[in-house]
Image (cartoon, rainbow, N blue to C red; front, side, top):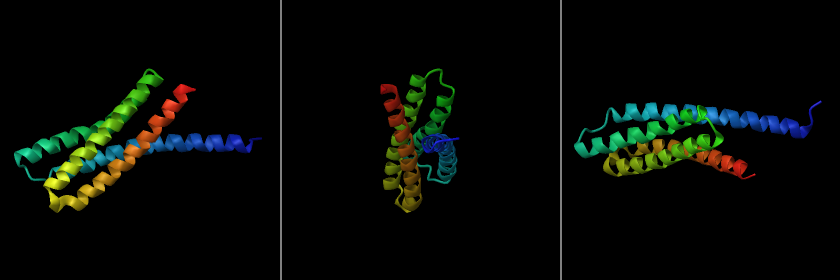
Length: 136
């Protein structure tokens, strides 16, 4: 017979597992949506430089989450999540810059910024949780 504490622990483990899967999926979808969005953007040279950086940083979020799964150690796993978080923060920077340069696309860019922020919060929480477990 399962105690209430064991039941809560199992539910929390399942929730954590689903959040990791969800963040990987959300990062993937964000990358695809951003690439499609940028395909219809102005091709002025300075805009193209920013959009190239934006594609790199956005796709790096999900790529590092996926790389974490293949890690040889917990330390390496944590490192990939930290890189994913840095990429999310960089992505927010490029979106902010693009929003200023393309005010007519502000609303859509704000949507991307919001999703990037939510993904960053999930990753940041995971990083803090992993660091806490390492310090025990």
